[in-house]
Image (cartoon, rainbow, N blue to C red):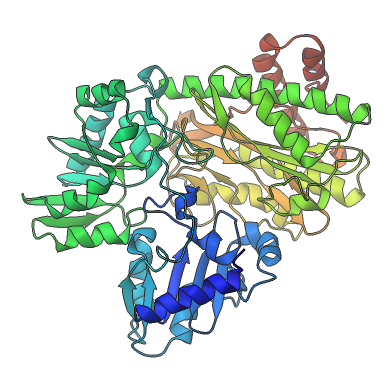
Length: 596
């Protein structure tokens, strides 16, 4: 096997051939996806680090990998045998990769990157950082010829996501986009994000692990709409559906020519945060096109779920809650009987129980089943060679989710497997209080994710603790498990609107000791309207008990206990009609009210 250092040596030879002194390899594809098809996992191939987020930078003499707090522990392990230095993003004193390049390169030197792998906004920021030293940028594919055995672009069969789940037909969604374009005084929009294309066209596929999406682009104009996709994988009935809804289907690789060949004067909207730089250059070079940078219309439209979507999403969570109950009952039986249960066993069991639910289409992400200290790695994924065996003590953290035709789920529970330390109990209670503080919030119209994030985080801050991630993220509708524009992060400025779904998942992560997280999905709902304006609240749409065995009751307020008991009654009411026998008995026991 070729080592990471040998791969970097090959990359440096390519850099020299192309006259660049540094190369940037992001975790990206031409659609700025979070989860990548294997064809575009270049950063993983050249660095050896396989986390979902990170940027590799290689100069003639040095190399570094930048990643966020979710992956500090994992990245340190995986980079240990290579020359690559780990740069911990957002840690005081650690430069960004653009600052690193500006410092390391000489005046007038060139930075190379594949323009289809970086969004316009990142390149614009880079150019601004490089001005002082007059560094140049060059869009060039350096890896194509030095990646042996590179996987092909996926091309799974496309199917229609029916309006009985989606709420609107493709034609109706196109009209919604056109209405938004008129407001922005644009004649059209090129849409590159896969979740946006899938939602807009009401199509789904299986191109990306855990994401029911198809590698494709869309273009919407006032009098026409186009889908750019591998046409060989589109069945006749899907072709007919798209045609009926006013969509012309063209080959995936024809997107470049389509942008070059726009022959009438048009103002084209693109979102610089999700549109790749190479396609942007094609538009800029077309004299008929005026590029208008702004917010992608589809992201905003699909971020607010319609009534049909909400009804279906609730149904998906009932199914998912039932699968979780069946899993938990079986897990307890296995542990009681002294059977060997590993983290991998847990992953297999959850996959099996979800698969038995009607309309299940797999998992929404790789299950995180993390025992004791492994849970301190926020995005830990067990593998059969190294997974831990679960004992009757400490915590087992499980973060998992399912894809259903009715919706996408994401739930985390930290299970008490046996005796806990006092610190573990206190941390567990702090996290639960943080979760409850946000879940029970009432907030005024106009508040953003950044405004309400602090309601949760303050519950751990007061103990001198923080978690190096957001408190929550938007969730797609039979789409990506992480979908914006809304999220709960201090620097998020997206206004929370009725119909948005968002997770609530504070945590505490102590390296070598434990990781604790409690996560539900919430729906933004109208509360009351007073002389001061419209107020909103969160309705919980995840249905599964929160383990009460780790709670320090004296740290809980009366309001905390009231919220927890009310939530458990909701869980019982939603799931009990679908369960029977020992599973119903387990649910009744674990949703019983608790008190002092």
